[in-house]
Amino acid sequence: MASNITHPLLPLIRKLESITTISDEERAAIESLPVRMQAFQPRQDVVSEGDKPSHCCLVLEGWLCRYKIISAGKRQIFSFHIAGDIPDLQSLHIPVMDHSLATLTAATVAFIPHAAMHDLTTRFPNIAAKFWRDTLVEAGIFREWILCMGRRSAFDHLAHLFCELYFKQEAVGLADSYRCPLPVTQLDLGDATGLSNVHVNRVIQEMRAKGMITLRKNTLVIEAWDELLQAAEFDASYLHLRKRIAL
Amino acid sequence: MASNITHPLLPLIRKLESITTISDEERAAIESLPVRMQAFQPRQDVVSEGDKPSHCCLVLEGWLCRYKIISAGKRQIFSFHIAGDIPDLQSLHIPVMDHSLATLTAATVAFIPHAAMHDLTTRFPNIAAKFWRDTLVEAGIFREWILCMGRRSAFDHLAHLFCELYFKQEAVGLADSYRCPLPVTQLDLGDATGLSNVHVNRVIQEMRAKGMITLRKNTLVIEAWDELLQAAEFDASYLHLRKRIAL
DNA sequence: CGCTAATTTGACCTGGATCAACTACGGTGG
DNA sequence: CCACCGTAGTTGATCCAGGTCAAATTAGCG
Image 1: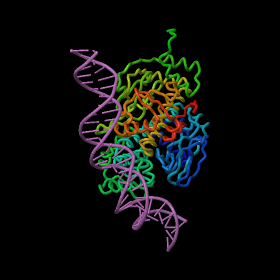
Image 2 (image 1 turned 30 degrees about the vertical axis):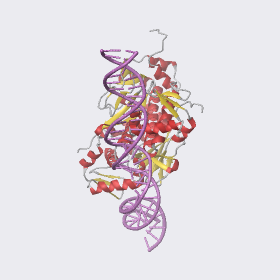
Image 3 (image 1 turned 90 degrees about the vertical axis):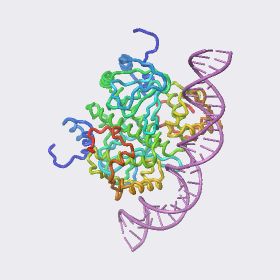
């Protein structure tokens, strides 16, 4: 297929290539997956708690987050998702959603029927293994979040989150030069870290005052890389990226 | 070896049966896995951060926990593991351990070579799918812990943890009648919830005073089931157990 | 230019941490 | 059988990180 425009599933291929090598045959199989693309407004649910999805969704553009709301309207965000992520792989093996998935920004999402995914993973155990690996890495990220929530100060926690989001984007070519998109509000950051938006604001100002970061127009710039890593005690190995950026 | 005593891998089979049906052939394949059994003292590392395991480990008896220690000796426990769990399935696909695994009690662990596990999952995709499913469920449990740490009070968090540990054990036949083993110290509970041992103690006393639980000799008795579930806002669906206990 | 959402600031409060004893208890050796 | 010891549990006093509430101020956007 000698098309010279990019294939819609390119983000997925790029993500897989960031951790492994895929054969031409595998690439072709992925590119021939039947997809239904859909555009979403910011802050819309893509899948909701209690749903029984019949499709997996793949982020093509924009940011999504997983979240859950408990009584008194308290929201907890569990993860942020960018192009190439398949945030509800779990629906392949667990019928009922135990949390919701929503856009943070305007986003484009590709829906792939479960049947096609099952077929793909059956025909290509290597791809199945990579998907499994992906959920294992994600579990590792959850553990790191637990650690941050349980044992780090608000300052260190946010520093850690910024490092993580930078690395995740850098690994798939969405960030470089210590600069990356961060299209989320301080309220979202609070819901992700378990802090109040007021406190998030104060911590960010402290980081700015220390010359560690700037955060404007949905762009994070890490001004003092070493200091930020050190405050966060950040060790990227839990992300299990194949390539590490040069420090 | 035509022994009529229970097979050492029975806990694993029981765990799989708690979520799915396994064929005789699959059962035979599991029972013929080459295992090396090892007994551990309490509070010993089974696998340590940075290790590159060549075996998966399966808990046969006793309690294990995953944890990580950061500077200043702060410890965070990520999960508790009981008979039938394979806490380091991830080493099958991710070479380097990003956390440690230790016993809480005296424990017996079966080590299964990665090669044998890869062989098993290749020959029986159904088993591979169940293992994958298991990591997905575990990720869901991590999310619930994140929610508890971020958005619940200490009281509700501990109540939630007690519910979870009861349900997990009940599902594999290790608990009933609102009574289950809980062979961990209050310090361990603190490291799991991100609380200090002092505060854990105070919360537990409050629960006792309210007649909700008793906790003595490493046994948890839930005296007021409904109240505990309600305080925790506990909804067991995130555990994705096949059978639910009758309330 | 006007509206709404997001950020920022200030004042005050509280859940849970920390520190420091002290008690209970299961082993262990004499 | 008892004295001793180390671990786990309990209690009290004090402190502070981060929450809450409310009111600006600013930024983005149609």
